[in-house]
Image (tube, rainbow over all chains, first blue to last red; front, side, top):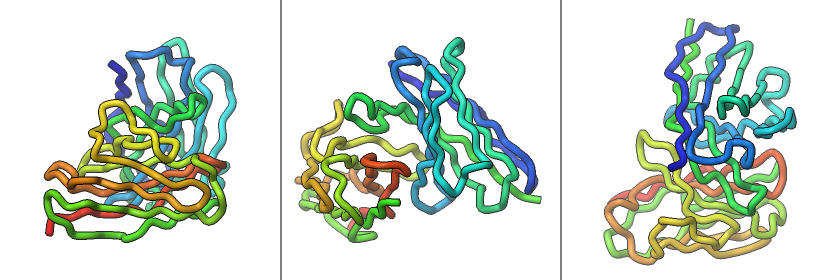
Length: 120
Length: 107
């Protein structure tokens, strides 16, 4: 069975950084990319970006450029999303998703979500 | 960025009703569209990809249609577990963009 298990909730002050991990299992990690999606409480979904699972290729949503970095570690089948210079409007649930768009599909497996709260 | 406009933003329906949700893209996206269901407090779940392909394990009462700019998700006979929020997502071009969501509530 495919599983994506994310790290726990975080509380950060404005200006700080957060790094969320996403440990995957049940499939060949390097066969699928990883995307990240966030959802502010009670609001809709926003795609944040995509990262390759076997090289350094990545593509980020323009509004996050310069503040976000997505990486993967094939040796541990884990993906990471770091967001810097946090603001109050970054308070949201952050999801990692398995990204099979290379195979014609869409986000078929999701992590459980990590709540990041930005507050002074 | 491609804008995805969903309608309606909410609807009320009864068990057994046929429900349709629309998603319109601001430019042509061929069939690069998926539909997701999100229950409160849970991660979204993929229902349909490539506009009309049913994801494995999803009940056949869900179907998708459309291409280009206009797409539809249909639930043929609404079940109690279908009351949720539904989102479309285009993956034709970066940035990938979601629709604003449609909340399906019990009448």
